[in-house]
Image 1 (cartoon, rainbow, N blue to C red):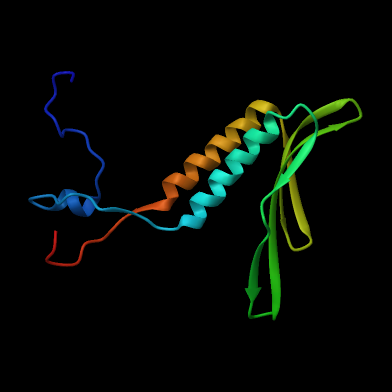
Image 2 (image 1 turned 135 degrees about the vertical axis):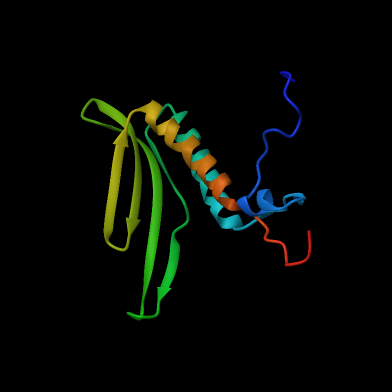
Length: 136
């Protein structure tokens, strides 16, 4: 306590703050897959970053059936530690269909990306449940 009244700072929604008597916030898990992918990527990045030899880890491909074109789109994500021609580093690679983007980076940015993905997935996964009219 730093001499301020309790409850002065709190996490809440605009709707709940506007009420004369705020209800307790109801937080629920929105999409388990989002947090699963984020945490899996963060763990893979940590594992690859700690490796003493070059290695590559991949998430299972995500397949999406595209009804408009009658095909299937496959998205892949991988992380790797690489060494070529006396140089080395880390990379995140994302592929969709036949197109790939690979971003090379030093260890510090690689670890930051892992932590960012973990935090981002965790934050995006939770949602305040909207209460039904007349209920608190």
